[in-house]
Length: 319
Image (cartoon, rainbow, N blue to C red; front, side):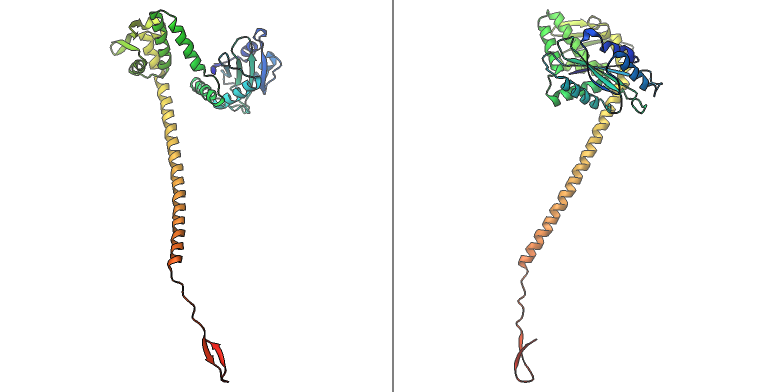
């Protein structure tokens, strides 16, 4: 499952696109908007965005797609879209959204349009939406037993490499490795270490402490960064890493904080559980001890009543 997120400004543009006739469009769900035409749907979206006119980029568009061979009914697509919104922390009951399925391609896919101005006029966050979308898709694949789009993509790329000449195959392999590791690197050293784990060597040239040129090596093929693409030249790699450093570090800090909070929560639960178990064991031990004492304490035999002689000489039972 793939969820490609785009944040934009025009509801009219995206609504016209999803309703194009050659897309064989079918509206599967429409929350708070009319699904009868592109014009009516866009008008409803735009009416609500007036609750927060300062938010210019109010359109969240998600292209949801599944690999060929994944047979999904309309109900299943709708259920997956709702589950996806939940994973993206979008309250599906408190904002407008629409789901439109297209049947113009072999693989099942649908378009999810979300108003980032919710019913209360608040902004629906788009922070870290690319990472969240990837994580949501992986989670839903496991939860619903779907074909892994990531594995399919890797298999296709692997098959493609096997049919290419050695240099072209090495180029494709290094490009794939860079696309995986570059978005998470905060330094050229981190990127180098990650690539080396994938069997890609790196020869970097620095000038005044700044990365100027880079050559990658895989299976005996040496490839300049610029040969892989302009974005992978030494200069551009340095700029990319510098630009994303703060964001990546912030994401790591958030994950670390979340991990610590989870650890503290688990510790508190473990301590509470231990306390309950200890109290139960103590109570049982006291009960067992009391039963043992009751069995070992000698029982006192009551004294028989003493006979007494009444005044009239008759016998009676007295103390």
